[in-house]
Length: 373
Image (cartoon, rainbow, N blue to C red; front, side):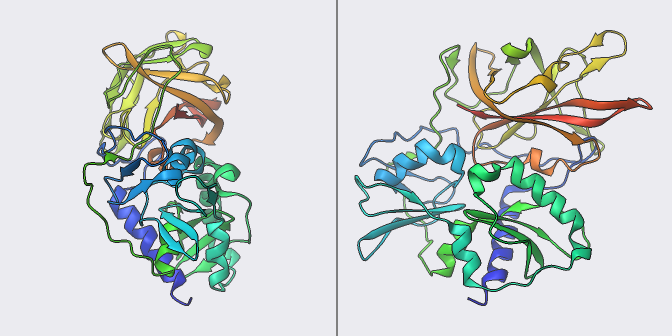
């Protein structure tokens, strides 16, 4: 399939345009406002029910809907880009980042295809010149980790390769790509499901909603607080196992610089990026210490561990509940692109300083990533 590299390039570019992704640094940069379009009636995962994607205008039903509700949190296949199609007794449905298959759309077992492997085999591509990819490979690795690592992508199936004007790292179930040409850019997860649908000439035209519920994540919380079933502007952050119970202070960008909270015991929320209930990443930052008081609000954040439960509080006492998935240090000079983009689930990213302190600055940032439950 000789147009495959060009197709990947156009798909990645279109998703970039659609999500208004722009670069931002951990200390300075800019963020695009991402509107919340997923605060809607959740679809229920019952065999025979159907739901409609507000963004892509396609329906999901039966076992495909049930699988999506139960597994999208880790698989991150995102929204459907086709209707379910049947070929010789096998039903297949294409999503932005993956493809599902079953022999019975009402009661059958569902298989998540190795879409990355399928696409990679369709077209031979050349290995890149090592001189142009040292920085892109770092960014690809960061993007791979932040977006689910092996759990989402499976194992790598090749060394990085050149596809059109990109360096692409292929995995069993996906791919991560970055533009070449010496221009520093951000790595992006390739919409391999959408790419395969177009390669196979599957109809991607949308359909009418016809009164169906909107396809949306189904969260339940853990019963500690009233479940927040609508989007909201956060007023508090509660991390019980880390001893954090803080007021949330809305902050933003001033002169291209990511601001930090005015009060050392407050958590800052980047209000122009995303809020709980949006299908995107909520980003919050806080000071690790303060010169007049010592330990500040996020002093214990570097001790965060996967499995810890966090609560983002609404003003009415309800909350969105998140489970910590990862915690790691990142160079203070690293790009924050991956922290500021959607991950196909409602997620929470917390940032504070860590590492060595010299000349008034820490040389690392502690990143804590959590997903809504």
